[in-house]
Length: 390
Ligand code: AMP
Image (tube, rainbow, N blue to C red; front, side, top):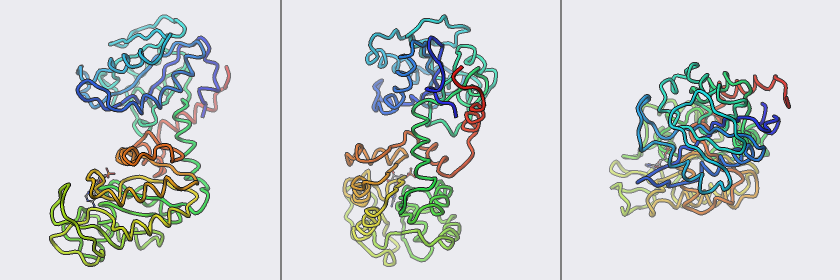
């Protein structure tokens, strides 16, 4: 696909679709991670004396209805603080035309306020396309959604290319998914197996080992064990059984911390997974299992991680996830992690700088691993047949 660095964007109107969907509470931005990840592309475009027009969504407003709490104004104020010497203009309604002025940054209001955004409206995309010479798709977190400001705009714009963040995300995922350096170990945790069958199947195909934890492991354990009142999805036990029979590289815990009541300070005991009573529930890996898994991770040359292996939000029950996270952090091979809870765990255990790459995408990260063909990627690839460096 054409990258922003392949095109001559000097003195051009460059429209960038970023993912600036940051968490906001009480009118305060709670994490700047997504803004920071978007900045290299914005700064690169500005360094070429272009005029940058920035698009993003924020939260889930009702289309056609303005919601002050989900306005991008707060982000424009933050950008004003950090981008010195750049004129920053916030525009509420989509203008018909924008006069070119170099080194200016125009931020348009939340794209999800506009009718047609979610159903990929061509008409809406044309309004955006009219504002720019070049469209840069950089919102990796939205790559799995065909919306007007992503997919349709990529089709309608005169020139379309990929931004630096998108290129970086795809580069790391490719390294892990295509001819990975072996052994490759994947870790899949989280609550619901129903949301992760796609990536489990894919990762079982390409990894040497797939370590499974959380509610997902419980559903596998329920094939042969009484797991009491542990979180699991009984409707999917059969599907889990088929997957387990198909592959022999699936690693489940053999011991677990169990509680009788689900709360932060609950008393726990560690039990073998075949010994769980009706009134008990699995809340974390047992230490024996976590240490066994850490030894497997130690030998890996490629690691992919998505999802906590226990209820890591509770201090008493985060040890399993911590042992796994620290084993990943210690590993000198390629390590890639993605997903909202996974990022929270990485921040909690302060290992952010120890991993090779932390993806900014949750759903997008999973969909790409699953290997689905994504219309936006297809469009970007189609565009690469056009002339570069015009
Ligand atoms: P997901 O969004 O599917 O990645 O799931 C993450 C959530 O799974 C976290 O909130 C964890 O607390 C939860 N989780 C992990 N293990 C368990 C478990 N054994 N019992 C209940 N919840 C769990």
